[in-house]
Amino acid sequence: MEIIYEDARVIAVAKPAGVEVIPGRGPRLEGSSPPLCAQLELRLAAKVFTIHRLDRQASGIVLFAKDAQAHRALSMSFERREVRKTYLALALGSVARGGAIKDPIREFGSGRMGVDPRGKASETLVRVLRRFKTATLLEARPITGRRHQIRVHLYALGHPVLGDTSYGASRPVGGAPRLMLHGLELAVEGPAGRPLLLRCEPPEDF
Image (cartoon, rainbow, N blue to C red; front, side, top):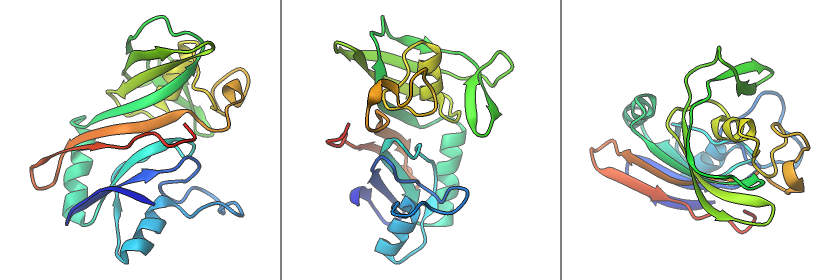
C-alpha cells in the first residue's frame, strides 16, 4: 500500500484498481483483497474513518481521517462541494472538445445510474489532454458528487470509459483489462485549517 500523505489527523493512500474502499454487500470474493480501510487499520493498528470513496474498478487517491472530529470537518467540506477532485479518464473514441456536462443523473435500480430529466443536478468539467487512434485521454473534474458520475456522463456523451463493465454497448468497453479511471488530485482544507493538495500518479496498468 502506497501512502501519499500522512499527518496526525489524516492519511491519504493510493488505491489500486479492483480494491474496495469499504466492504461491499455480500461475501467477499475468494482471492480478492480486503477493503482498503481494513488494510489501513491493520497497518496503523488503529481505527480510520472513511471520508469518500472511489469505484472499486478505479484507481487513485483516497483520503481517510484518523479521528472523529477530522472526519466530521472533512465530510462537511465534501458535502459543501469545497473539495476539488481531478480525475484522468481514457474514453472510447475521439472526444471533440471539452466543457461542462450538466445532464441530471438518477438511480435506475441495482445501483445502476443514468442520465434522466428527473434526476439530480449533476456537473462534470472535462478537458481534452491527448487524442489517440481510438481513444481520448481526458481530465475530468466532478463538481457534484453523484455515484458513477464521470462514467455516466461520458457514456451519455457517447464516449464511455475504457474497461467499464457497467456503462457501454460492448463490455468491458474497448476490451481494456481494467476501468481506465484514475483519481489524480484532491485539494481540500485540512482539519487544522491548512490547505492540502494531494496528487497520486497513475499506476503502470493505467
